[in-house]
Length: 285
Image (cartoon, rainbow, N blue to C red; front, side, top):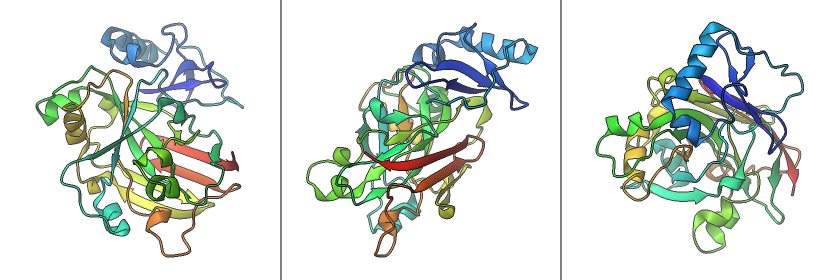
């Protein structure tokens, strides 16, 4: 299934994109697409049955905003330097274990919402990423099979980053990762049954129509199953939590000087095979 949330920010309602590309209203069945729903197999089965029957009301999508596909996210766990090609382009050593950092849940915005360039920023960068959405409480998982059984689905995540704040201003990466609007998510949460191999997905990102990133999740150093298993050794993952699994080569940081960092007026477009597309216009904060 392709689950999404539509409407004005803070007042989104649950919806489903059916096999014909028609937007369907889920508000008569569930109150939201969130951790509580993702952990409720009976509710998900009711949605599947209603979708198959064709009984769900059609939603007029003209002019309708798409919000983040998951509401009330508890935490956004991020994995750094998780693609072989990205590590090479930045001159970084291949990590022996996954690098973990966090984004606050309030950085998450809709897939086509405006992204704000922070005040005094000169190094705002792009990163297309596969997001993993947790569907069952996960702690101390033992195997890759068990890890994947705890995944509700997948989405596109844009891990916008300010490199000066991240690298040159002291401390951890968090200062360059948690600026407002720095995590567009969506448009859809695609349930795990529709993504048989998360290591076989193409990722693309363009800036002002110029292709910048063109990668594949096959390049991940730590595949999705290992990321989920590993993270569960250090923290409890709850339904509705999101894991950003890293970005392939092609970011501004890895390019020759002068590096083409983002500015107000730029347009970023990104896509992952089967998971939809995003488009953001940048403005000054």
